[in-house]
Image (tube, rainbow over all chains, first blue to last red; front, side, top):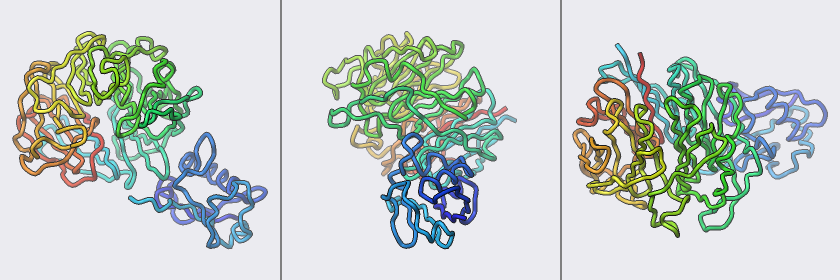
Length: 98
Length: 371
């Protein structure tokens, strides 16, 4: 079980409260977790990754275990603590004013 | 008694203002989609309970919301706006080629002919259409590939397709406008497009009378007279009597002919409204006096409408999509400001009052006249 923390605006958009819990088949990577997240909440398509390129939107960040994973490959394994559900994958909006 | 619903898009959410036909007591609901930029909210002219909203943010991209109960509840619909072909390039601000990139939906125009059809004008400029009530979107072919695209360039707010006008009886005829490319018309439901900018003069481009490149801010039409178009250009208020084939200036005695919105009285097709703004860099009313100008002669001769509007120390702007009219008798006029006020007139502009005054900066105002 993977635990994902969404920023407030995306929780509102997806109509969820608190963290999202997901099951991911195979290795836990940014791509597999986001695929599962978007399958569960299709309204999030395009809000985290670009529809066409599947690249992270510029002002979105991925944190876990006290590290910024935003610039890692989407196919790199997530930390074991995230894969095991011990730690959350935190998706957040970058500090960009407003 | 009939009523009015005013749909307000702001920098930080949408608001719905409602009143009965007297238009003297207003209820405000919102913010809907709090924290998001709402570039436009518009109701279907066929089904007034169906309302569309363009919701976007720099962080989370584009969302389209649809309500089927008059704004009581909302559901997300499709939000993928993929250009139909290799997008190519347009001119960047410095004149260099820049790849076409989707940024946001500026304007949603529900069809006046089919309830499940809605058009979207987007940045970077293109026209999209949904035939399934917003579930999916397809680019309307021909416009971006008209051939002049590499010469289009963004206005200060981005290269946006911001105006979509439908012919009242001919679904194949549409007018659109782009900043800064100009106005275009299709007579075959979007297969082919023709620039309709003859008569426009823009000193800000190398050839002031070029076929494209003009910064058109807004076009308005009265449905009883669809060949007559009124335009607020970057500078100049213009009029066409031949469906855009030719334009002539009708700025007349306006104190300044720079501005953003222009609209037409619901029952008098020669009565039009603009909000003069000091200049292209001074986006506020001249002399700190917020004045709507009305022409009852289809342009040329204008009168200042000031009663109830601030006449000192007012430095707000009124954006291109932020003026609308209702269809009651007498006609109501509404506009929103970057200072968060929405002003309304129940008497075609003679007197005004703020029906809400401390919203986030207003991006758009639309009005539904309810049965």
